[in-house]
Image 1 (cartoon, rainbow, N blue to C red):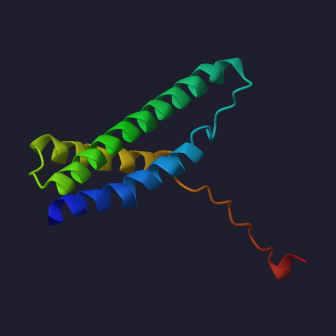
Image 2: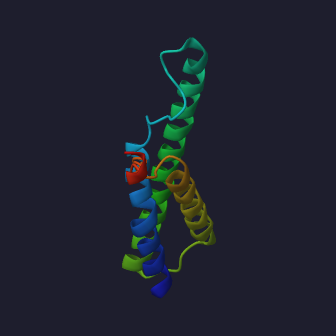
Amino acid sequence: MWVPSLLIAGVVLLALPALVLGGKGLFRHRGYNAAEPGDRASVVTIVLLRSLLLLLLLVVSAVVLLSTIGALVVGVELHGMVYVLFVLDLLMAALALLTFGRLERRPVRRRASPARR
């Protein structure tokens, strides 16, 4: 009873926010300029791989949520593969959050020293 509830909480509290934040940072690519012909292929590759990761994260999260909710409703034991998919889901969520799902903070502006004035 506790384990499926913990799986649901893990997916809802970590994977779904990672999906939202990753969707916001999907087209953000620092250091690359899509207008330059040399960087265009890199930008396309980055956006394609990020969208593939988010799609896979969505599918795995949906499978884990449906399996655990179904097991709770019917009252059966979870299959062992659900735990493997849950760990994969958490790893992909961490990858999305740590790479392109971070909130971009503006650099702090240095204060001018009063001695220079």
